[in-house]
Image (tube, rainbow, N blue to C red; front, side):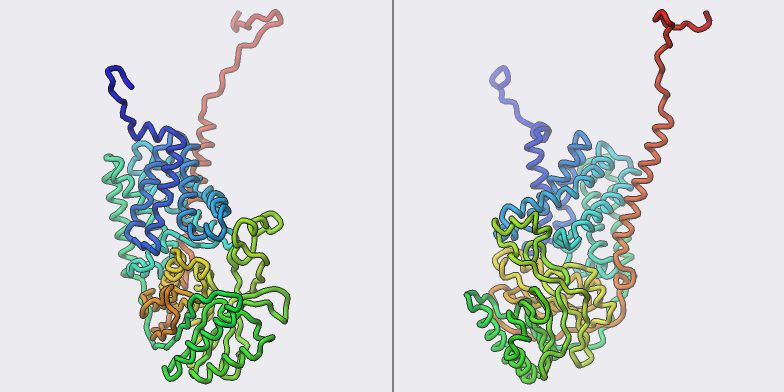
Length: 532
């Protein structure tokens, strides 16, 4: 209380001076972009979601505090985007988020370096190039499979925006992330610093012009045919005999496809829980279904193999005469869900959550399968659909249709099924190839060569089969041809920044005044007086 009984009102600067309140604000600000992803799917929110975080970091009193704000914001972002893992990994979810959140600490320092105070037009222009590049490098590092993979890349929030999907065909999801971050930087300075409004508006106009030019220039996929693909989604089946009952339900749903003139039937991840070499009766039953519907059936076997040690998840193609010999073993496994990194150190995760009790084995190469009717398909399993490079390589190898067999039944009542299904739209747009996302329990979805939705989703409450008329396209997109060039550009930008800062520091050291030496002393301890 002040004299006279007047209560002093705490202003925002007061509570931001507290490291605890500031830390909480950073965590909450970093978590905001989650609303741009499914299930809320507020795609438009992505273009302003980073603004509070950016404004907080730029106000940091020191570079060290900016690094903390970047780290805590990254922790909030990773926790929010992966919050559906908490029931399975418990406290380990927060440990992983804290470790990966540290990737944003250098980004926080860059934000303060380029946006702190009243940035000049030149500094703001550099920020519109450097800060999105720094963000892309964070996404690149955390996209490594061993760190969890590219789940929740900022650009993937634009999965249902057709102009954005068109840009994805030019530079992949990386280009979308770059543009989204750039818009956030410009908006932050537009609302925060009056003197920066003109260059901020100029930055927004330049971004819009570049995006529009890329949109106009990018070629559209050439539709040259259609194929009828059936997705079989058995729904939630629990119990000790769930493997047997799931197979029976898939069998029943597939029989209902007879006479519908389908070209391919796709079952989901872990649709067969037994090694077909040890259960030839199951292979014979699927072959009988293939003869009935007059189409090959792609199943997914999740079982211990008889021909080699260990458990594999494998896409297996079965035709009228039985397994065709085409098989794809999943290459990129889900950390903790399908294996535990450094199990000797982190094996304790099995005691606090639903981490894998035994590591599954990896495949060694991607496979393109010929399913007849002139159709070649490229299968992926589960979260492999999150990796842009995998679908791109399949397209380069001649796949005309991309497939993802998935199961998110563990996260049935969370945002995970919708988030996972949305990723297929990005992969389709990037490669100019249609993509089928088939799941055990939903959400199953199909997208055309431009990333547009084909038919309706099979939601998490459905147990059904559905036939989709899928358009086929030929040709190569710029992303097919040039790959992850936005990431390579970001690396060059950050390398150039590092070189510039190094040269500047060297020049400053050379130009610094020489230190004054203390006067020499005589043997009697008195200073020498020159000239006497």
